[in-house]
Image 1 (tube, rainbow, N blue to C red):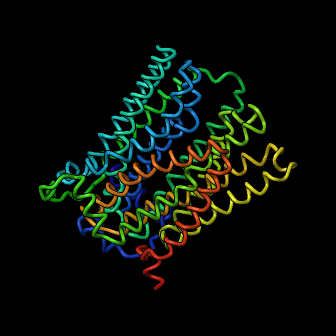
Image 2: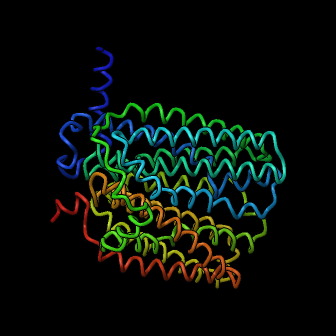
Length: 443
């Protein structure tokens, strides 16, 4: 018992050193207020472990290399990002009625983490035991299970965060997790660069098995969160989840505008692959090293995590606006520099642009996650998160198809469209209401 109290005391001392309160704790129920520090540390620990795994199970870096290493057909590469990203968003509105029936939402996160651990282990087993079409199909099937587990974690994490942590601290928690995952990504990327040898299926399978272990540790930590249990909510009013989602979008203008703004902010998410494709076309295979882009993502997370986390707590609305403008400006500068032969032939133009876009994309992600958690309470928050993510899953597929069509005439045209959409999103974002604790205190 003495050791337990000492551990709690250490947590109580460390948490305020990491997270600065921007507002009161009135938006957290009284029974949960004594556990804010311990719950915050547990969520940071579990989500940091999950983020470590995410650096390995990446549809933009590691998994494309894995499919190539096992001899899977190149056509399967096109399915990685849609399955990983849209697959984790589309089911969320359908999962909401079930989620509302849970008194403690942390168990949904635990189940989602277990699914991701098993799916990651299955991907590793496929890499070791299969080749060609069979390996590719098995990896994609496991990735679909992974995405479903991620949908549960995404939906539950924001709900648990809102129930246990007050406004003014939520963005900082996400920011600290981002810094930790960025440090891991940086270490992984540097290790791959130092390795310098063939990054084969066996090495990637070993990394994947290690990543599966991080999700097991994460679910153990997350299960210890002291979430205030409430009476299970009703599963709905008898209408289908699709009908309820449509009604929410139709009758809640603020929420509808947020979803539209978030869709327009896809500029920083969708543009990096086109930058890489242009670089590869101009430099052959010199820009295709796995470590290089893992390093760029890690540097962006380490540099931006704490800063963007605090800015999100002050005004997540303004952070969305400025990051969208930043992404559009970086794309415009990149397109201009492509017209200059010396810049176009430089090996630094493409990784630096990738880094800058990863940096502002991080700010966009932290801002919109904090905004949607702060804008509602209780089961309304669960619904907001689910419907927004399901709508984004559909819009992500549509935007990917549209930019892919434009890319037939040249990757530059896809980037032009994304830059224009980013500016429109920033202008619309200015009209969103302020919901952050920092902006309310300033007012």
